[in-house]
Amino acid sequence: MSGYALPIKRLIQELSRLPGIGEKTASRLATHILRVPEEDARRLAESILDVKRKIRICSACFNLAEGDLCEVCNDASRDRGIICVVEEPDSLIALEESGEYRGVYHVLHGALSPLDGIGPEQLRIRELMERVAVHPVEEVIVATNPSVAGETTALLISKLLKERGIKVSRIALGIPMGGDLKYADRMTLAKCLEFRRGV
Image 1 (cartoon, rainbow, N blue to C red):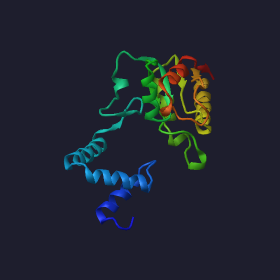
Image 2: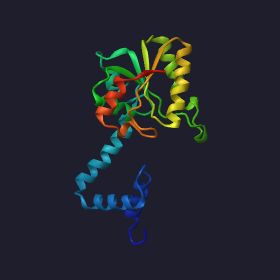
Image 3: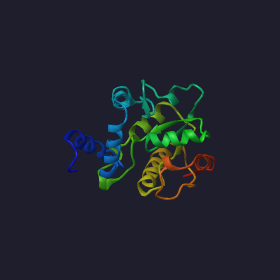
Image 4: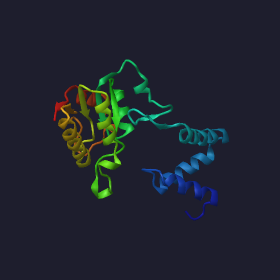
């Protein structure tokens, strides 16, 4: 980064800390920000701060929300008898875009990965068990990613729910192993939900 003025170096360093952004991409972004009108840069900075100030975790499903409940949990037309369990809010959004699901969600905020220090205690599994104990459900759809961590998480959740006599299904694997729900197209996600199977 030699040759850059100190404020540009600092901006490049901060941008390169974002996931998927290397130093070259961070340099291009910093140069772009430098070229845009000050008002555009101010809007970007304010939108980042706005997200940090206003976004919290939904008290019901642990999705991202502006208030106490997210948009899905606030929707009275949703079928609360079906809960779809996903790893991250991005997966919830991808499933919502398929337009095929009308139940509610439960966001784990990760998947089991003992090598990375992520066990059941680091996920929202306990909250899921408390939720189904308080509000009986007809079915829980496990929609974790088709990866080793996602499959391990799905097996644990299925075991815990079956012990309580709850019907558990797993989304159909129309998504390749090692894939990520947030990158799947709408039709694939719709079929995954439509052709889900029991676990």
